[in-house]
Length: 200
Image (cartoon, rainbow, N blue to C red; front, side, top):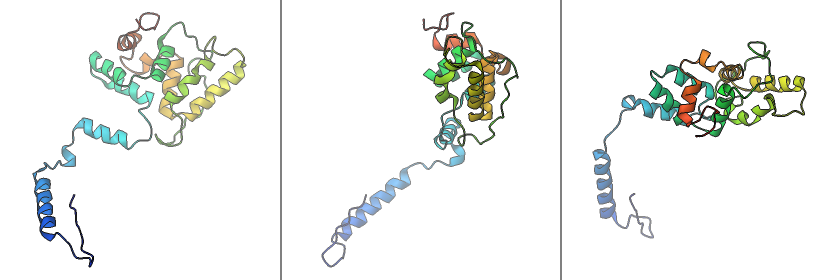
C-alpha cells in the first residue's frame, strides 16, 4: 500500500517516497506467477464450483460420486470426505435391517418430482434427515398412517427430484441397486460400524 501525505494546499508532501513505493509494488506484482484460469486444477475448479453454490453437496450427488468412483478406496474416500451426522442417519436407514420403514414399497409412492434447479426452490435431505424417524417403526406412534404417508409425499416434493429419488431408494433399501458399489459393507467400513450399524 502506498501512503500519500498531502500538504495543507493539497499537493503531495512526499513525492519521492510515493514514487519509490509505487515502483517497489509494481516490481513485486511482476514477480508473482500469473495463473491462467484454464490451467486450474480439477480440485480447484470443483472448489470454485462449490463456492458458487448456496447448498452443500446433495446426498444424491454423493451417491452418484460413489457410483462413478473407479474402485473401493475411492468410494470409501467419497463417503469419508462427506461424513456428517445427517448422512449417517440416512445411510443407517438405508442399510440397517433393524430399521423398518412404515411406507409403501417400490414405486407406489405417488409424488410429483420437484424440477426446480439445484440450489433454488427446494429443501435438502441433510436438513430433513432429522424428521425421518416419523416414517419408521417405533419412531412416532401418535400419527396415523395416512398422515405419515402424506407427510412423506410432502417431503419428497420439497426435495430436488434427484434427492427424492435417492430417498425412495433408501426407504426401499435399494441404494445398492441404483448406485454401483454403494453397499452396506462399504458404509460399515467407511464409518467403522459393526454389524449392528453402531460405532465399533
